[in-house]
Amino acid sequence: MPAPHNPFKQALKDGKTVFGCWLGLADTFSAELMGTAGFDWLVIDGEHAPNDLRSILAQLQVLEASPSHPVVRVPIGETYLIKQVLDAGAQTVLVPMVDNADQARQLVRDVTYPPQGDRGVGYAVTRAARFSQITDYGLTANDQICLLVQVESVKGLANLDEILSIDGIDGVFIGPADLAADMGHMGNALHPDVQTAIMGALTKIDASGKAAGILSTHDEMTRDAIKAGARFVAVGADILILSHTAQALASKWQDTLK
Image (cartoon, rainbow, N blue to C red; front, side):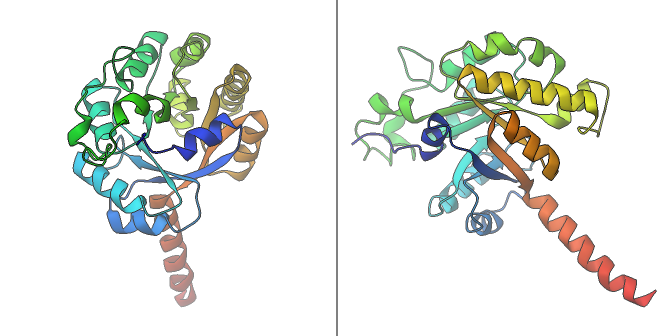
């Protein structure tokens, strides 16, 4: 029996545009709810949300029953962290702060079994291999793992061509907030200079044959990103959906008393 098919990776290979949302509440109940909303993919965020390995595992478990594909963002591109989330059952991993080809090259090795890579061969006891029921997991897993790297600095953009030349990277995600800050425009990803850099990078990624990704909560920017070549497009975050809707509801009724 081979490793499970990765529909998200296949969609990117086929050039489809898939829409996603960020999960930052670090909770299984809200993750399960978001899995019913109709998104193609959902990011379990290990970088900025209060997640650890066990909470990531729990969210992978509840999302297994949903049509939304879970993408796990690790806090940093460390081999041991990537090994753990893969063994926990993640098939798609998003790695932040990738600035050069050497980092990207090692990340490819991190998600790949020997002799091509460095992933530890302990799959017989892992959830990823259904606790030894997927007998051919070690021989077939490499083809179903999807590696997405985040380029979100001026240095990363300068090295984008070299990063794109690395085989084994399935997609490159441009991080608007960090890029804006690094360009001197903290909190203003809509600044014209930042937008020019983002759209230029997305076009370059798409032209390379790899999938381009973005997170945007501004409709005009989202449309521009899709036109520029973005194919895995996050359009919101559970925390923002909850907080903004709650604030608007409270304000609506408080205003009736004024």
